[in-house]
Image 1: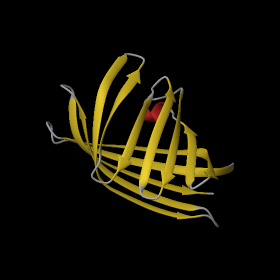
Image 2: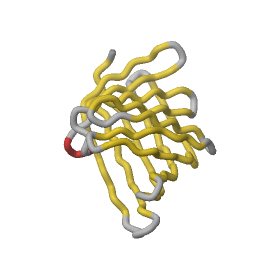
Image 3: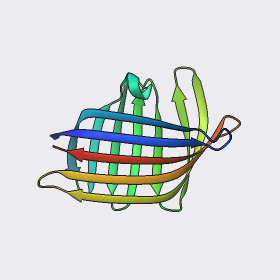
Image 4: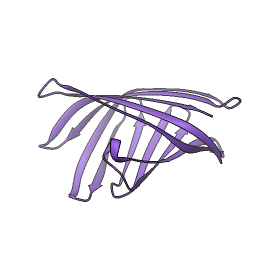
Amino acid sequence: MNKAIINIRTTQLDINTKQDEVIELITEGKFYKKSDAYYLVYDESEISGMQGTTTTLKIKDNQVVLRRLGSNSSTMEFEKNKRHRTQYKTPYGSMTMEMLTKSVDVYIKEEPLEIDITIEYDILIKNMFEGKNSMHITVNK
């Protein structure tokens, strides 16, 4: 595993209130390649509201799977024009979350390490939230 600096910036537009929220996390993590996929692993922090959670991103072609384990647990799959439903578990209970991925753009260069991922997706948490999200992830050594 190689050490890496991971920058994740998520912009979320609440469909009902029309308000944007931006969350940005810059953290140290690990990067490795296994078979035909790349993996990023990092610990969440208070900034993301998920302290005590480890996040693993699996990147393969133009598909990204984001798996969180710990105080918050979920598996989110992003593949263009695909809908994915998951259980989002928090210390306060579980809820069903649905994502519809609009686009996934992945750029990876191994030496020197450079990763750039942009994911555009709609999110729906039944009776609670509906939004449009943009997640931009960059990784460097």
